[in-house]
Image (cartoon, rainbow, N blue to C red):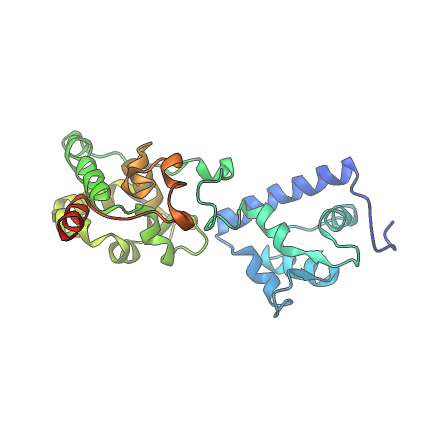
Amino acid sequence: MDGGITMELTERMAQLAAALESKVHRYVTENRVRLESFFFAYDRLRHRHITRAQFLRALNVALNSSLILSREEELALFAKYQRDDGMINYLSFSDNCTKIQRGLETRPLDDVFEEQMVDNHPRNALSPKDEQHFHQTLIPKLQQIAREQGFVIKMNFFDFDGNRNGCVTKSQFMRALPDKYQIACSAYEIDLLWARYRQYDRYGKSIDVCYHALHKDVAEKDPALTLPDGLKEEDYRLYKKGRIPVLSELERRVRRVAR
């Protein structure tokens, strides 16, 4: 079986491959590794396939030699991801390990992996007075602004978070925080956001800000804060080319008057 080009993916191999994918997922998540970029060095034209030797070499570098594969485990990966000519589909492997679903730009209402929906970022406790202001004043204010402006909070931070870990540095957080928020919030309220969502990186050397937790707290389950204008799925599909109009209530009134 080792010498042939094609191999059958047995139940045993499928289990081995799944176990390895879980280990790789844990490593790249904890260490914020952009897995696919290590394979790109062997695929300049982005054909999405490389040789077995290139695949193993790139994987070893990506994981910093922290995971040594047995021959049986190597064959399990080959059986799952190789083409008929023996080339390995590294992009499919990367997507399975990092829980990425491609094409969501054209299908934004598709279901996503459950792991991506889990909100496991901790929130820091505030003093009783600060907690009261945070929940009764600050969060409702941020929700109202998000509804009026029709934006999805987390998308403002994506330029600084290529790996989609949900965290950025303090300076990046302040640069990406929507202007409307910075204008509407006092210095005290900005400090509350920093105190609420700050957390140490995995090395304990620097402090990041978890913008994803902020997004979840503001959006909750309100469709108006996940799809602009509060459109639901059935409304969304009525618009041509899948576009969602992003207009505040004031802008909509001005348009009606201008007509």
